[in-house]
View 1 (tube, rainbow, N blue to C red):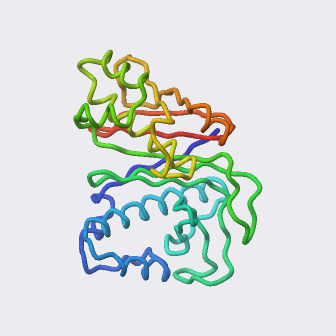
View 2 (cartoon, rainbow, N blue to C red):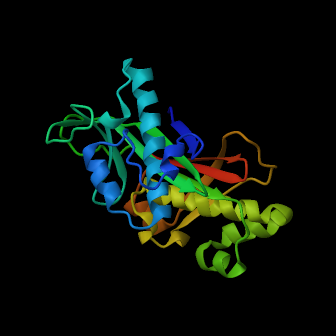
Length: 250
């Protein structure tokens, strides 16, 4: 299983900070979407997420097909359930009825000026057909910060709460990682926050965190497991003051 991922910040694309600029790397449909943003923070976050996703997909196509399309040829859209997808336009900046939807599961997240995007190949996808569902990838990035106990008790399982009590000095880190893991699982399920997050448990070992990928445990309750039978793998790491998580459902 080969998961590709990329982190980008406003330093990688400073033109995003110019509120009146329309980036040349957006296609026409994306430019229309951009015009609909009224809140500057949402506009910047959306642009940084799209920039990161396009750069990752461009790298993926170069590595797998020997092609390097212009970023404006790559359209990052959203399915009815909100999950992102990527399609390749026939002409740079164009958008019509004919396009190639790429056989990948794509996930985008952003936090405090950093965007995190992950990509994994899917099978059974062709021209004009909806995305294959497996494997499905969810990615999340969160800034490590304290979580109020009322938040923890409202959204964490008993096992997760016990893990935090045992973590003592690293409780803020593991609380952030736990919430981030839940977000990643919900994205892989293509459900967002429409599910009760206490149906999902994300458990981490107590060893000191490092700046490299390590596995974490994902458990679903009986009802959710019956609704979504399959195999789960979870990965997490630190990047500066951020926690990154990835969840794969296959």
